[in-house]
Image: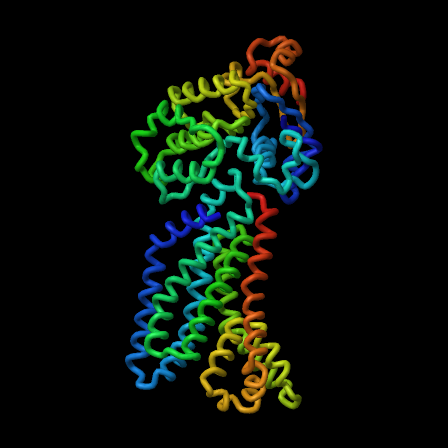
Length: 236
Length: 255
C-alpha cells in the first residue's frame, strides 16, 4: 500500500535518512523502533509531505506522492507533540478540521472524543490545555475521518494509563478492520499487542524489517523488549 | 480555499492591533483634513503619512502574524490541502483585513473630503502598497525560520524602501549630475514601489512644476495613459513577484 524507495534526507550535515526502502501493506501494524534521532519522525514526515526527501520516492497506493496532496485524505496523523492555534477552542479545532475534510464520505468517528471525555471540555482554549489533553485532541483528530492509514508518532507519550489503554484498544480495533497502522514508540512493552511488523532504524539507516514472529524466532525471546535489547547488544 | 481564508480572517479581525491601526489612520486623516482649509494640501500631508505608516504596519503586522500562524500551518500541512492554497489563504486573509483597515481609516475620509482624481489615486496607491508589503512580508517570513531574524528583515526592508533607497538615489544623482539623468531617474523611481506611488500621486496634483526639469520628464512619461499602464504594471509586479517566490519556497520547505 505504501512503498518507500531509496529515501534519503539530509538536514545540513546530519544524514537523517540514508537510503531507506520499505514496504507497508494493508492490515499491518508496523512499529518503527530506534534510538532518539534515528530518523523515525523524519520518515513519517516524508510520508505526510511535511519533509521533502532529497532523493527517492514514496508510492501511496501506486501513486507517487511528490507534489500530490489528495492522498492525505486517506491518512490520519497524530504528531509527536501537536501544536494547535492557541486561541481556538477544542470545538473550533474539530469543526475546522471537519469543515476542511468534510467531502470525505461517512460520518466522523467520534468514539475517542467521548471515550476521553473531551466532549465535556469543548469550549476550552487550546493554550489552556495540559500536554496530555492536547495529546488526546491529536489522537481524536487522527481517528476522526476513518482514514485507511493511521500514522501515530509516540501516541501514548504523556497520556495517563487509562487514556493510553483506551487509545491502544482503539488502535487494535482499527487494525482489526484491515487498516494500516504505522506507529513509533519507545515504550516497547505496549507494542507487543499492536505491532505485527517491526522496523528498526538506527542513524537514519534501516537495520531490519521483520515480522514479530520472525524476530521472536531469531532472538529466542518472547517479549519485544527483550528481543530488541538482544538485537541492540548484538549490533553494537 | 475560501474556508481557510474564513478562519484566517476571523482570527485577524479579532486582533486589537488591527483595530488600533484603523483608529490611528482615521484620527490622522480626519485631523489633517480638518486642520487644512485646502483639501489638496490635506492630500499632500496624508500622502506622506500613508507612504511611511502604511508599509511599516503592513509588513510588520503580516510578518508577526505569519510566525504566529506556525501552529496553524503545521496542523494543516499534514491535511489533504495544497500548500500553495494554504499560503495563499493566509496572504488573502492578511490583504483583506489590512485593506479593510486602510479603506475605513484613510480611504473613506479621503473620498469624502477630497473626491476627485488625486484622492482616488492616493487610495489606489495605498491599496497597492498594502498588498505589496504583505507580499514582501510573506516572502521574508517563509524564508527565515527564526522569528527574530524574520522581523528584523522586515524592518530592514521597510527602512530600505522608505529611507535608505531615497538616500542612495540622491547620492547617485549628485555623483552623476553632469550627465542627463532623466531616464535613469525614471527607472530608479520604479524600482521602489513607495517612490513610484509618490511620483504618481504628486503628478496628479499638478505640482510637478516644483520638481523642475525632471518633473517635466516624469509628467511626460507617467502623465499619459501609457504611463498609468506602466506604473500599474510595475506595482503589480511588486505584488506578484515576492508572492510567487514565497509560494515556490514554501512548497519545498520542510515543516
